[in-house]
Length: 76
Image 1 (tube, rainbow, N blue to C red):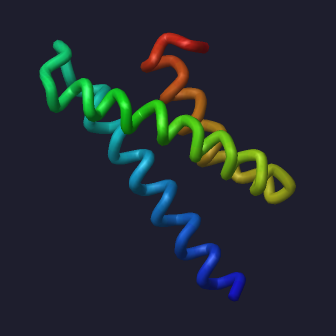
Image 2: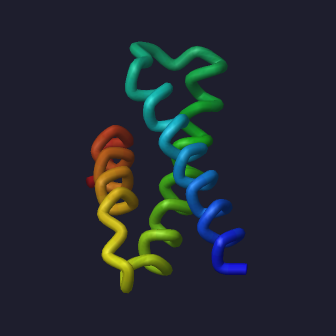
């Protein structure tokens, strides 16, 4: 069961990272970019929750992605 959770956790991380990577390359806010930005805010929430859950494991990749998303959204 833990293996399935780890796989799900990795997939969540990759999906959130995809939103970050895609948005960080954008220059203006087209309809697609607005959608990506919404996805980024959702990603921020998910990654923050996963970081808190995995904090005991000191999962630095979540902390780094969290920092990057916050900076990109100018909320850090």
